[in-house]
Image (tube, rainbow, N blue to C red; front, top):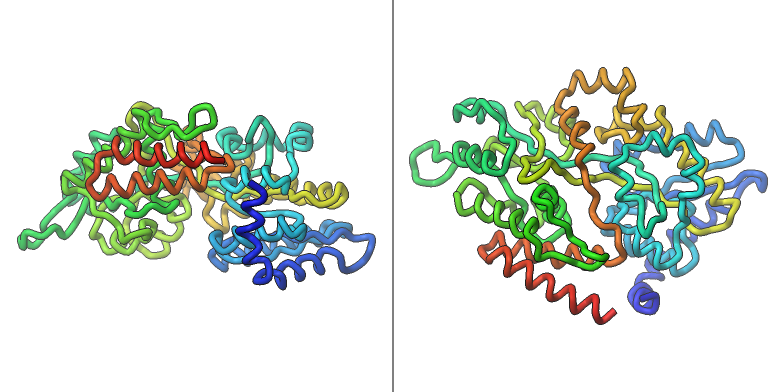
Length: 426
């Protein structure tokens, strides 16, 4: 596995050498009594980066013996090769802000430090929202801490619901189909649909997989069995069949390929419902449209999917790793989580922060956020195994094939067969 990574990454090492050297120089310069740490992140949009930088500055002011330099290293797809190149070249940062899905690869490379000894002895462990541990733990060891969190729900346009005479929000899959049908209209009589009930993301990328997984979890489906891909299961088939049925009903419209996260049609009133995350509440509020949020409809049980970023302590030296843990303590604190959540629209990962008066006052002004807060009790994380990328790619292909008219079971079986071949040849 390491040999293949080396072959793939050697092409990019020269391209990123300047960035790596910059990080190393920042890490070793200055007063010898001060530990200088680098933190790589891909935080967006730019205003969120500015907010985070103020937190870093505050930490540096309060810790004269530790100075953290945060470096924006590009979007997630741009950051991945930089991270792996730096790891293989022994020039990694001290801390990494990234999706927990990278955990398995980093563990394989010995690039990150396990955190359970530290966290088990910290009172902060009991303050972390319990559902987030699934995305922190691999092989019974804790490898990261959550930085922010979110989940998916259904955004809807109340004015369109009212015009269609809908007074009850859908709670089940069957109710979702019924409501979507009522919201699908030819408004001007030209025999072309002007308004669809819901938009579904077309494509095989991660956003499509991410949006679909709450439905699979709700139908009691799982992606893994004994740590191996297990796509052909009743829950996965049922979830794909639901999306297929919405399209056959004529109630759903597909997004542009790999653009399922775009909100233009929802804002324009061309669709009445869209799967989106808690970060969209403040965005739609600023846009000025009427909107509401309801929980993901259920099949057998309530379920949604966890989003957000985690923080890793990279393998460096014991002294630097201990200094990095000080910054992680800061990130987990009630004060940090409350302020950050109020300013960038994600949910606090700290229970005390979530229950604080100042945050509850904010929720009272934006009641849509309560839907996401309540859903955290039934939120699931994507697998953080080393092979998740290949798993997601093949699952995405199965979802796309189904949306384009193929049988859900056949599409999943083809994906399962491809994954079996990949797993057996490794």
